[in-house]
Length: 193
Image (cartoon, rainbow, N blue to C red; front, top):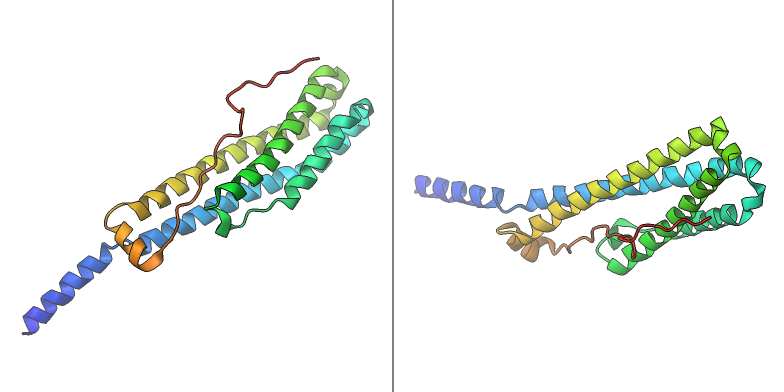
């Protein structure tokens, strides 16, 4: 009888260890951590922009519209927040992405200003800030890719057997939304002088 109870306990332990409960939890936490990295890189960009704008203002007062647009876009980005409980909401992610896209567009126009005015480009401060901004944009891209990978792993973990049973009966976690390209991102930006 003791041997039979031991066999049942062993079987139960094996079944519970392969149900995926802990792995699903780890995968969801990885999604939240990756999202935190995305927010941190966007915050770095938002913190860097005032310095960049102030430096550029000194050299390009006649390009006030572009600088105002950047300031307004940055303010809008600060108003649109996306908490981790909204990561499964495509509309909320789209709103967040749209605000970030507007800021990216304004920043790309600022870089065109730099190309148009050699005196502005010659400023060491501007070059340093421009490099920091380019590095930040690269960091944002990497953070987005890591977030999408974490979402892929999490979504796969709640949809594959036997984890899907654990999710359906115990956790009831929803799929997370990955970052998608902005509308029109497949088209190269047009620059005209």
